[in-house]
Image (cartoon, rainbow, N blue to C red; front, side, top):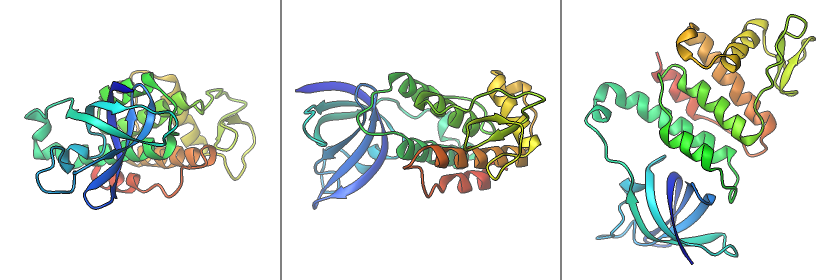
Length: 234
């Protein structure tokens, strides 16, 4: 059976002599793996630059629930790059953010679980570079059902990464009072313009949220792209 679906590229692996296996976050079927033939050969219709991380695609794919690896019949880019997106002043930051978001999705999502609302968010997410990583981690956590509970209060001011909620007693997995309060501000504020945290504080919260993911998702290990992001977001 054939089906049409948009998709976002997450990972590409060489396969046989000229083919690749591409892991794609599709809108209709969730994360799926597809064989695309001829990509690494001369004169192939589909070029490797069409399969860069988080590239948005229109796809016609073969669907067989019994197969873990299906084929792609047609594939075309969904968006063209505008002149504004080509400006070199933003390219380094945009690339770092793209790899960061790709790694989050690649390690957090399970294959075969459709999440159309999350897909729509990822494809259309915008915002200032300083806050995008934090909002992205919190939004993905919400769709995965592991969103931090915002029960912050005077009696329970410390966020416990293991418990996923605010607690009254400090443990090995609780954040500092200041970082706990900062997380509360993000969880309770929908307008990023109201947040005035500095770069060091934002970095600390990103690191804390990655640790949170690692505690709550078994496949979320060896995460690296945030280090590059910290370097370029100065």
